[in-house]
Image 1 (cartoon, rainbow, N blue to C red):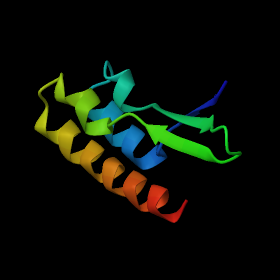
Image 2: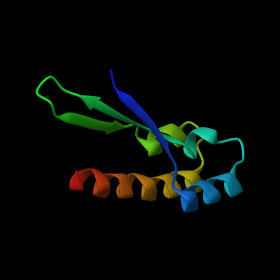
Image 3: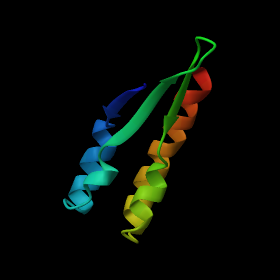
Length: 78
């Protein structure tokens, strides 16, 4: 079993929506918290840049690149 969190970065979501209102995957990130047998947890997220790459929009890629950088910073603190 695991917990799935749905999170968004309001600034990035706003920029993304302004650029392409039909890019919902770029506005909502799934983060899984998976307990391990030793009592610890693994936290994982999909690559936000990989999600918008399908749209081929450089502006979306830049915005989500900033989201990816922030996720790396947050995950490094866990």
